[in-house]
Image (cartoon, rainbow, N blue to C red; front, side, top):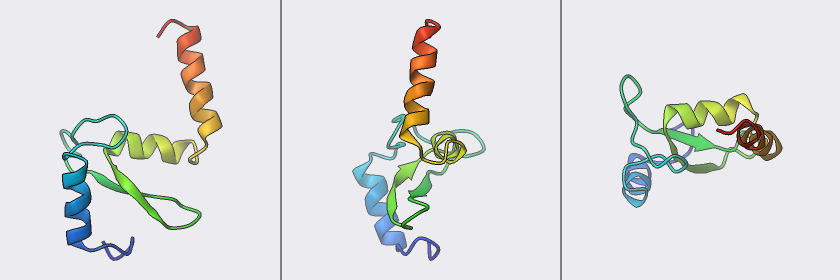
Length: 81
């Protein structure tokens, strides 16, 4: 928690506000990665919300670039997914 500048109480409040689910996919963490990750902006360090490991890793893989995420969605739609 000290890495992100929030307390355990802050984390618990975020968890409650999100209903215990990922802010993106709305699923709880599962399996080996049962806890939600603290997502933060790598440029500013500002904490955003709690994400499951999968969604957190996806954002990291695309460097938080919304254009890449949009292109991924368009690509899937193009191929009937």
